[in-house]
Amino acid sequence: MKLNRMNIISKLGPGLLFAGAAIGVSHLVQSTRAGAEFGWGLIWALILVNILKYPFFQYGPRYAIATGESLLDGYYKIGKIYLLAYFILNLATMFTIQTAVTIVTAGLASSLFGFSDNMVLWSLVITVFCYIILLIGKYKLLDRFIKVILIVLAISTISSTVVASINIDELPNYNQIFPVGEGLVFLIAFMGWMPGPLDISVWHSIWTIEKNKEYKLTKKESIFDFNIGYITTVFLGICFVSLGALVMYNSGLSFSSKGDVFAGQLIELYTSNLGSSFKHAMWPQKRINSTLRMVVSPPIQSSTASKPWGPSSRRILSSSFGSL
Image (cartoon, rainbow, N blue to C red):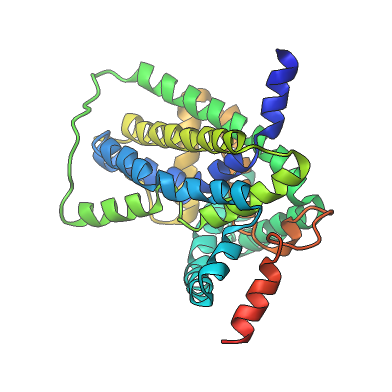
């Protein structure tokens, strides 16, 4: 039984990488803001959008296991125009998303380590560090690293939420609301970011192919791995909303729009409930999230991979865009 359990854990990976990629701006920023500004009033939106997006995200690993190819190969098969559309979509969003994630990570690093408040310097250091992880460790290091990171983050977040719920003096209000005006704009952004951009499904298909080189996964095992990661993402999203609601809702306080100030406030959500020794729990998660934003670059591939991004994805990209 113990051996069987260890075998199951060893086969987990792409789903946890999905969770690591998703738990970024959507959770640390948008979910805590949702709780701080609307209490538990937007829990309905968090649950609804995760239900609606579930089949789109699940298709990534399902397709990879069924065909042995990434979704990039699939896009190419149905027409070069679809691959081009994906390329343009990525080009239009990659800088915004990477910047948002890196700035929050830089703010956390500045608050935790304190020897510099230069966000540009921190952003550069973090980006270079993440690239080195991918270049040296490739998929295997990322796969093992994310398991430790998620366990630490989950334990600290759940513990902080439980302590905060015990410390409140009044009964929480779980009435659900539909915001209007500026609140509606926030709701759209909140649901758009949650749990992450849809192109993570492409990344997931690539991770599944890489994992399948180490362990021959069945469809059932792959979907189980995905479900573990997805449920973790949703549950921690609820925890982050709860932290914002428990600590900041109706307190007269609000989150700052400045990255470094916001990072300090985010850390305070943990330290106010668990003590200052837990403040470093946030740093590894944002660092790994920044790393995962670069995960589709060639260095992520394992040392045995002869064709990065799947059986023919590099050839597909070069022939597709070279002929257009």
